Image 1 (cartoon, one colour):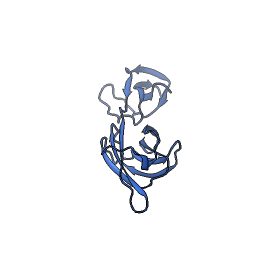
Image 2 (cartoon, helix red, strand yellow):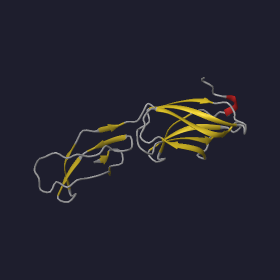
Image 3 (spheres, one colour):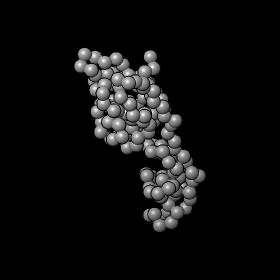
Image 4 (cartoon, helix red, strand yellow):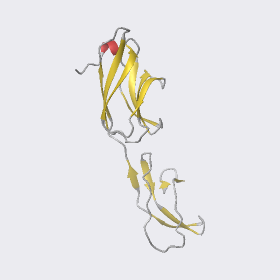
Length: 155
């Protein structure tokens, strides 16, 4: 299997002199356009190419609700997410606005949709919520920056 835009080989299987049969491949973990190619004579000549296969993520959504301050002026951030890819290491985190500085985060453990809560957030810090896919490889969604004591409030 090849990434069509980079022509980089993703994975392969040897045919072991078989003239026909069925092969099974795991779907790529990154969105993109892929194709299957069959090569002969130890990668010297391409014998066939498949139609393009498109892998997509999304649409991804985040809804945020800020809870009341506790005695230490910390807030709980309630996050509803939809459209996560569903990998074990997809993550939602609270970040300093405009940076990749993680303040707190939580792994989604394969969930594609759901609700999480992250607590202990300084109510006066400018933050944003970010959803990252597949072990911090790609940011899929983020909120507009906000100060927790000023909202957003959905409840």
